[in-house]
Image (cartoon, rainbow, N blue to C red; front, side):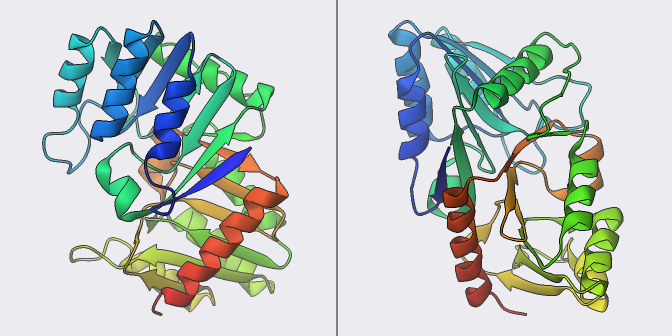
Length: 293
C-alpha cells in the first residue's frame, strides 16, 4: 500500500503505474484528458500491453467531456468504450495492472487534478482488493452485475452508504472528512449524531467556485449539530477521505450526495495501514489549518 497526495506528487505516480504494466491494463475513469497520461497509455499499447479504457460518456459540466480522448485512444488501437449505462454517472477513478496491482483514488486523470487539486491516490497490491476491483471492471465492461464481497472495497451503489453510516456509528473520538460535496441528509444526520454523543467531527470542503453554494444546506445542518466545518480555497478540495479515530481511512471517488451513493458507479478502499493513515492525517491537518470557518 502506498499513498500519493496531489498536487504534491504530480502526475508521475500515474505515469509510472501505467508504465509498469506488462500484459494487461484496465482503466475506469470519469474524466481522462491529461496529455502525459494519454501518452503513457499509448506507449503501453505499443509495447504490447492489452489496454482497456472505460470512460463516462456524458460527464456533468465538463465542456467537451471525453470524446476527444475516446477517439484518440481508439485510433491508437486501445480498446475503449463508454461506461455502463445503468449508472447515472460512471464516476469511478481506478486502474488495474496485470491483475496484480491497482491504483484507486479521488483524482480524475486531468491536468488540474495533478497541479491544482487536493487529491489522494492509493497504489494497492493486496490480492483480495485487486481481485475485487478486477471483477468490478470486468462486470461493468461486459454490462453484467458485479458481486462485492471484500469488506475493504467500497462501491456505489452497492455498499457505500452502509459503509459510511457504519463508520460514523463506530467512531469513538474523532471523524475527519475532506470532500468536495456534502449534499446527503442521511450522512449529515449520522455525522451530527456522532457529534452529539461526544465525537469530534471536522469537515473540510472547498470554497465554492460558483454561487449558489451546493454545500450550503449541508454545512448549515452540520454546524447546527455541532460539527466543525471549514472551507479551503487552495488547493481545490476534490479529494474524498474519511478518517475515523485515527485507525481507519476511506479513500475513493464517492462524494456525500444521494446520486454518488445511490445511483453512480463509484469505487474506493478502506485502509488501516498506519503509514497511509498518518499521511492522510497530516494532510488533513494542514488543510484544516489553512481553511476558513
